[in-house]
Amino acid sequence: AQSVTQPDIHITVSEGASLELRCNYSYGATPYLFWYVQSPGQGLQLLLKYFSGDTLVQGIKGFEAEFKRSQSSFNLRKPSVHWSDAAEYFCAAGGGNKLTFGTGTQLKVEL
Amino acid sequence: NAGVMQNPRHLVRRRGQEARLRCSPMKGHSHVYWYRQLPEEGLKFMVYLQKENIIDESGMPKERFSAEFPKEGPSILRIQQVVRGDSAAYFCASSPPGGQAKNIQYFGAGTRLSVL
Image (cartoon, rainbow over all chains, first blue to last red; front, side, top):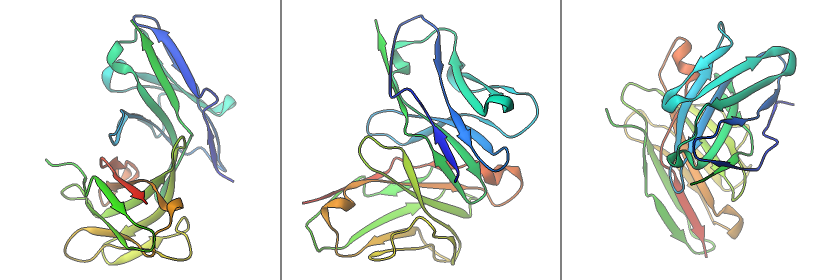
C-alpha cells in the first residue's frame, strides 16, 4: 500500500537555527513528491515539488528539499528558521488521481 | 487570479441534517479533489472529479457521502444525515487540465464542519 511517513510529530527550534523535517515514502515506483505548509485555520500552501531531474529542489520562503531514492526520503530543510515559519508541515506523494499525505510535523519556533 | 474558493468556511449541523460543501476551482482548472482532515491527522483523499464525471471515489465512505462537479457551477460535497464522526475539516483542491502541471494540486482554505 502507498504510504507517507513523517516520523516527527512535533519539532521545536530556535529562531535562526537550521531545520530538517523528515519524510519517507513507500510507493510502487518513484512518485511525485510535495511539501505543503498549513497555518492554523488555513488551507495548505505548496512549498515545493519534485517530479524528476535534479534531486535538490528549491521552494518558496527559503525552503529546499532533497530526494534520495536509496532511502525513499524527501526531507525538507531550511538554513535559518524565522518565527513566521511556525506551522504544520505535510509531506505528500502521488500525482494524477490523488495525493497521499503524511500525518504532519508541527513546528514550533522559540524566540 | 482567485485561488480555490470554498464555502462556507465553517458549518454547524445537528445530527441527522445534511451538509453541503462548495468548491470553486482556480480559473482554468478542470480537476477537483476532495480531502478530509480529522483532528491531529493528515489529509485523506476522498474523491477526484472532472467536469460531470467522477474519476476516482475510492476514498469516499460508501453511504451518506456524494460528490458532483457539474458542467456549470462549483463542485459540491454532500453529506446526508450527518453524525458526530463527520466533524472534520474538508479541503478541496484543483489542478489544471493537462501536462505535468495536472499533478500539482492547489488547495482551498477548507470548510470546518461541526456536528452537534
